[in-house]
Length: 526
Picture 1 (cartoon, rainbow, N blue to C red):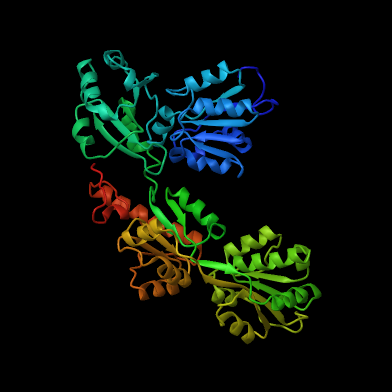
Picture 2 (cartoon, rainbow, N blue to C red):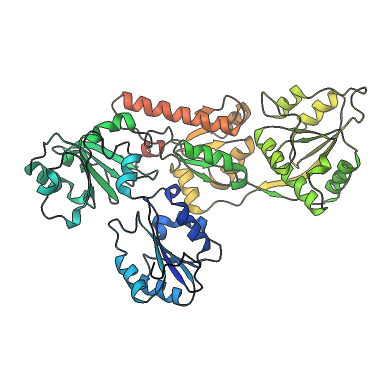
């Protein structure tokens, strides 16, 4: 930094050159995320690092470096105007980076700057490929192929050699290393799109790298790794062997509904995409909900039963409208139909008294609901704030148990607008590897707004009723959860993916995602 001041604490403008890491957005440093959160202007390669913009303020200006001619001039001018600028750089800004001229321009213009290290591909990609940087020999050498004229100096070392920018010249490089004394049996790995869910690694030897790479389709950015450490990959590979690695999974729910499910799918290596199939809207007339909230506060009810997180949201919004909070539930018994609804209640500040331990449905809730007992229950009334299309199963069951129910429309569900054309085409054309159906309505609505999923797409359903609806629409059900919860559904899909992978490996084949089996899909050679 030219004047020794701390980033963004100077009254003048500032430029921070931040290492964006190798590709996995989770590898951005805390310092980098903090600077992005305060930036007025962000300069980056949007295609490669656009996901990192989630750390920025909505009002931050974004410039795509791939489309901007004079990046350094733009950054310097903005800093001179007192703006806080973050220039996102691939990997580590000081590791085979091309931003030296931009840093020099800041120094020449006497603009304060900071250089924030990032995680370099040289170590991160190897780690994600299951290749230790140094094993028995404490030597680790990293070179840029575009800067090497004589490979003999790099052939002499016994440690691991990592080569940047060498994929197109992989065969000549291998021949040069062999000519300089490296055995042709030396293990080699070529890993493309490292640390992302598109990562693909070809393992070979210096003598066979040509034919093994010929049909693999590995392109830059990629790394070539030469050395005995490559042999550890069979034991240490953890990223590309995840059960749903690279699977594009359609989740027909809103972001609010699917946050936990998406996080779980990510942990299995999947690439989830949310496509809402329903839109939640307020009741056409609010009077029924107004009376219910008033009755809840004045002691009209013994129980309140929530059958969805949307119902919790609807009641919470009404509470906020009236200036109430979770304390209004004091003295009431609260039931939740399942885990997701229970989490929504806890986030509201309400701990449910009853959550089914078995099936998470109206039937499961009824199985554990206590019958009305006039000696124990001073009030025999239950409030059911639900959707306008709710079934009568719960009301009928509670009535049989001796309870009186106020079945109140808390919200309306309407079919969502169709997703963008590329999503519809991917659904019908086999671009998705799997789709998770969490209810019969998600089946009906997805087919209605986007069309029927392609027959190569794995269909996973939350339970028998959803399976029946899927089959009515001509869909082949491949996976069904062992219990009706979204977490069990994701786990069941992961188990299915793991078995498919094991079967392919056992047969000596390269594991392929379902979308790669459709006609016309690009297949990678072993």
